[in-house]
Length: 296
Ligand SMILES: C[S@@+](CC[C@H](N)C(=O)[O-])C[C@H]1O[C@@H](n2cnc3c(N)ncnc32)[C@H](O)[C@@H]1O
Image (cartoon, rainbow, N blue to C red; front, side):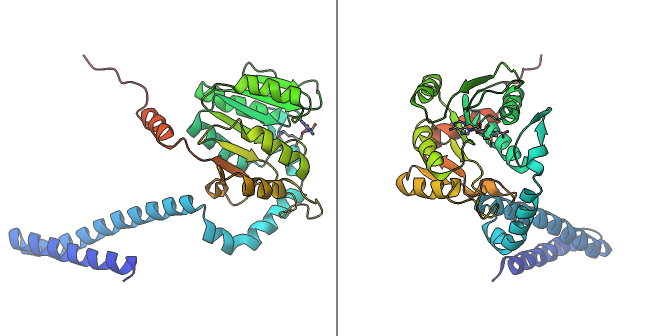
């Protein structure tokens, strides 16, 4: 029997019981309006509970079925969006941030959930994404950003939470500095957004995955290159992710982070397994909110 049938039967039974009860106990002409009201009330409650459950199910699955069904539409829009190069004219507080805003929204959700002590970003460019991350940390009152780029660019935003490192992200000296800044920190989040060629991303994945704490994320950006954007790109971040995951069972792709359908990081939200009970406990304590003052 389908859920809808079960719900309908439950509604009829509840309405009939309600009508009989009201009819037998009070003024009989009220029985039918009361039954209708009961029916309407139960229907509204049932509808909303069902809708919320469906939304939760969809979020858990990352909307996989819907995504597959809509895939040609999403891919067409993705190519249209990418080819417009609008991401090159997207900014955060006046600084260019080469991002799809839907991904930035997901970053905000991840940061709010994890409250990372340190966020490491490879590929600074103008510093817009680092500035965005710093803004979210400001709102939460926690976290710092280390961002690395081979190039030095004047005019990057200065912010007390941001540390700029110059050099290649895979240079042992740079890695040593990043390690020393992340060592002993409880929650470390990593975003890879530098040289997008497969060999470089794979080297970054190998080096930076060690820094990611259990339960946190290693976000590989622009896995859309060749999939479906820029079909001519050649082996890039997506190919590096596939190879990396084959050798690193401690990481898994989290498709729920692709719930907005359009993402520049398809299969690029890699979550490090573990951190379960501790993370759950931290989230539970946070959900209690700030301590309440007793009255009087
Ligand atoms: C896609 S941009 C970064 C965009 C920036 N995260 C944003 O969202 O605004 C890539 C950057 O990576 C830098 N880059 C290229 N190769 C690198 C390497 N080996 N190590 C560190 N940075 C590198 C480039 O200089 C460039 O600024």
